[in-house]
Length: 453
Length: 109
Image (tube, rainbow over all chains, first blue to last red; front, side):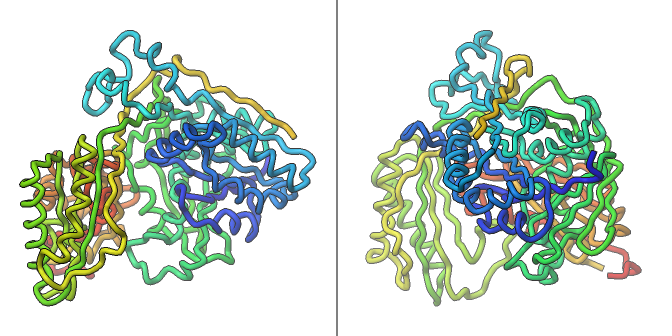
């Protein structure tokens, strides 16, 4: 068994810094590169792409990235784990093997995890009428079942660990928890059992610290953001994991950013609920058990993690079409910028009402004044400029489209000192809503296949 | 003495559906008991009047000197449904740091 392994975060979301995974591979030693590509909204975007072309539906950025880093990964035996397979992990695997051939790589094993996509099985899975209720509202799924775009179970680390055990050098999955991507290499390398709750929780917490990329190594740092060196070349976090479950969060020495108690704490509290019950398919982790210690420059140790038994359920995320929305902005200048923006908003709302256009919501915000902190924003005396931002949402696409046609006329028919309408008419976009639910683990089985070159 | 929370805390916020979470962290660990005593769920609920339309929950993390708040119904529907510029509640952490609290004059800032 290795003394420790180094697991590097390469992407915090689809759209993150493109050079980050390349730096992780090139700037120092790592054993694994893990990349999270799947936000909830990403799945429905990928589904649309797959509907247009059956060979698509995965994070396409992954392919040019692998073209750059694969030779070095093969040479140094760096394994890559990613959920970038999206709604089409098999095609993603095919595209990776094509790139490997193009690069003249002689041998490569790509592990593919599938089985998370339950869209085609919904009739069977909801037969009893009581399944897949919304876990927040308790509503029956029958109200949205015809409008569903995607339906995926969140798998955990185990299927990835299995693919690694079967020799995969790259593992692509569909919907997998972000934390599972980091935990899986530890399970594989250290042989942790499926009921070693404390260690599984330790790996899960390491995964939580890595899952948003540089947010634990100096990015979006609120305490003393000016103190973070060289964010232009920020180093993404690396988890140096030990067989006993101890993890040291660090980064490459020759990269920017910082790993301190404060940067790690900010990521620990990010998007969590009850810290004692951080539920994943692999275990339930207790964030109040861990101890943080600054071990040296840019090295924070996480240990003493406690965990408990995993639940009998998988979380399911389903996305459905829920109407249309559009946004538009206009910029009003000094003097009386805020007053003019308010008057324009009033005129626009009057015209929408005259047209008998109905919306679920019309929202007005004044950028430069209150769009972030709403009623908590302190009054501004005489701002130099204010951006009026208006959004509408509703089931009627035509109403939303018509709203987009009412914005530009304000330039010649409203208050003076207005500009910033270069983008043209706001277009309606589909609103995607989410339906969180639970499904007994016995209802789905992850499938692991290895495609070899 | 009356201070803004930003003098003694840092914070990060994010979203889970229509619920925003704010992690409030004491800048020095010795200040944690103070924020645990003063920054109650009720106080945060009042602070976010007109923003958090549902209840506010609080969880304690003394091991890292932090409190985690869940602000329900705070994101205009959440996800792609929200019409807010800050649909993911990314700036609500800073909004909490605006809160004013009374502290003992003997505390060294």
